[in-house]
Each structure stands twice: as structure tokens, then as C-alpha cells.
Image (tube, rainbow, N blue to C red):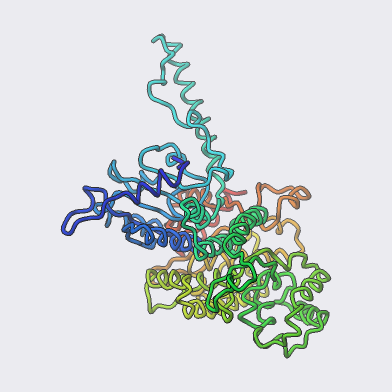
Length: 576
């Protein structure tokens, strides 16, 4: 069920648990809490906020990172005898948790998850499932009586006569079909709700324990949703407005001697900054070349695109020597009006959205980061393909990078992010120049082959999803086929050569709803709504393809490479 009072129904319940005595079992007395945290930046930020609250109130907890359903089930089985309360962050809301985990009757799950739609069993279970989800999100959950039917209602109007019994059976069949249709309409599309980090920050605010660090983590969690294109621009701007009020409250200082800021203080400020990835920690030229928005608009994979970039720089009047050196080393006179110069020239080249609302943080006077910088760095640390550490090691390293005491890890993450962004644009250029993006009828398809440079950088779901979204943006900008601009994309990349598996992701169409009115298209809704999850399941089931739905996003699957052809054929037939 949905929790209406987070403080009373969630936090005070967890906080009121007695501490375990030495040598005493925890389960029998319901002591301690287990945090199960998904491997995404928003979940990490929500976890950091909750950790800070628990530390403040001396709440004992155990943290276990989970990257998919298998790890979630394993972690639960290993710890179910020790804990009564389980907190799930960015996992668990969109499936029937009780059916998957089979917990004891006194086990309680607190679920803070952005995945939508929320499973109806979770919504209407009022004893074991507590949903920490904002009610003002457009959830559209079907009414209880529309999808569930009490057994005593069945046949209650029957008087025992044969015609009445036949009519009752017919009514039951019709009612079952109606319930199935209502449930199908509700579950067929996937999307994301309010950032979990924002939900946890609002809890801290209600408890009057919100700190500047917690506010920054909430900002990074929201920015992660924007970077990964999980929410609409309207939703992003609305949530930025909410956080901006908290930023003003926490960072307001009068300029007098009594309120002078210390040298090493933390300051958060609202910015109307450039939509360029890592540009303050890179060169302006590298950032322009490796940001998805500018690379797609300039078409930098072509000679003509490279010429347009040179014309763009010339229009701003920036010398190449200045543009190609580190941003921090550029002449101060050029940096003073750089944002206005870039925005003015960008408008001439058809890029109307070169600046965006965001936030920055200052650690003293030396260290400044935009929220998107931290998102890219943390994501790269977590998705690192390095084999010298496990997934848990990468999770802990990414979690540590969010603390201001570990800036060395954050800077290391920035270097990994630069490598990832370069590889992404190089792979996009390769796919477009060699015509790897092909139309399969109802969708576009692209497959990365083994041996492709940097292919292992895209074996992880988040990295492959970002590559797919950026590739689709670039393809839409490059193609002249109006129908292809309205198609979704299915992309596959090698996962394990040893096991012969590939990762497959489905990406919704890039075109927005206003363009759909001009050309007939069967794909409804905005581009932030995913619809491949159910389609993947049906295609695999109909062809007996060996598929693993392990990721928390249902539009990401693992598939045996040898089953790929028949799986795609079934998917084409299903979506045609």
C-alpha cells in the first residue's frame, strides 16, 4: 500500500527498533534493517541520504547492493532470518514482490522506487508492502474492484437453475476478460516517477534533519534522471523549482562580517548553464565533440559536420588554441562571456536548447562541479569494465565518490567518464558510417559485433541504454526517411563470450507527441515511456528463446546469441 505519512509509518517504525544484545538473534525481536540498493546513481543518492539519517539517529542497518533480480533474491534468502524490515531502493515496485521472494508473514518491505507502473498487488497489500512513493505522480492505478474479485461474490446471484448457472459462467468469462484488458492497459507501458533521492530528501526535511549534503544528493539524483532521459523536460523543470527553493533556504548568507563563509565551506547554487558534458573539466572542443546534443546536431561523424563545427567556433570568434586547451587554462577574458557567446551562436545553428537549468556545488574555492559532472563520474565508476574489482567494489567506490571527503575518487570518475563519452561518439560514428542501423519494419535494429573497439564498455545495461539513446538521436538527425524518425530502436551488444550471451535493450521513439500528429504512427505516448518489456517476454516465450529478465528495467534483457535471429523475427511479427 502507499504510505501517506513517511515519518510515522516508515521512519519511526524503523527507528523504534531496539538494538540487539550480544549473542541474541535479531530476527525474533525484529531488530535491524536491511538496505537493498539498485546500481544506479539516483538509488545511490537516496541511499546516502538514508545513511545520514540512520547515522544521526543511531539506527542499525546492513547495506547490500543489487544489480538485478537474481542478486535481490539471493540477498533476501541470505538475510531473511536476520531481519524483519527490508528497504528496497529503485527496485521492487513494478513486480509482485511477495510472489518472487516468498517472505514470512511478519516480514515488511519498504519500497522506494521510480519504476512505473507499480504492481497492483503491491498497491493493495496493506500488511507487508509499504510503498514510499509520492502520490502526486500520475499513477493511474486501477480500482481494486476492477481487477480483484472476492470469491464470495462469485455466483452469489445464482438460484441454482441451469440457465442461471450458464449465465453466471458467461459473466465470469466476460469479467475475466475485462479484468485482463484493464490490467494490460495499465501494465503495457513503463516509465519513471519522482527521483528516489528527492523522496528521501523530503523525508529528511520533514524530520528537520536536512543538510546541504543531503540537498546536493537529491539534486544529483534528479539530474541522473534527466541525463538518462527517464523523465520529461516538464517534470525536470518542475522538480528543479522544488529543489531551488531548498537551495535558497540552505545557502542564503548576508554579506557581513558575522556571516562570512569559511574557505573550505560547501556552497550550492542554481545555474543556467551550458548543455555540454564535463566542459569545465575538459577542453571546450572535446566537450562539443562528445556531447550527444551537439554531436547529433552538427552530425560530427561526417566531413560536413566537422566543417559546421569549425564554422560554429569561428562565429563565436574563439581561437582554436584556446578551444582545444583545458577549460581552466582558457583566458579569463574569454570565459567571462563564454556562455552567452555559445548560446548566441548555437541559436544561429538551430540549437535552441544549448543552456539548461541546473545546479553547481563549490567545495571551497578550488573545486566546482555541475550536477551532471557528478552523475557522469559516479555512473562511470559504477559501470567500470575493469576486472580488478567486483560489482560490489564498483558500487562502494561510486558511493564513496559522492562524499566531499573523497574528491580524488570523483576526479578519477571524471576521467573514466571522458573515456566513456569518447567511446560512445566513436561507436555512434562507426554505426552510422557503416549503416549498422537498419529498419526491421516496426522498429530499428543495431547490433555491435564482437571485436568492435570498446565494445566491452557497453556490455553493462546503463552504458548500453545511454549509447542506444544517443545513437537514436544521431540517426534521427541524419536520416531523410520520415517514417524511420518515428520508430523505436532495439540494440544488442556482446555480454559474455564465454557463455555466448548478448544484452538487448529497447529504446522508445525519439520523436515527441507533436510530430506524431503529422505522420501516422502506432507508437503512442511520449518518448520517455517504454513498451518493450512485455513484447520481449512474449517474443521469447513464443520462440522458446533462452532469455533472462534480470535487470530492474524490463526493457533490458540477456539473450543467448544463437537465439537472436528467431527472437527478432518473433518481435517483428508481434509488433507489426
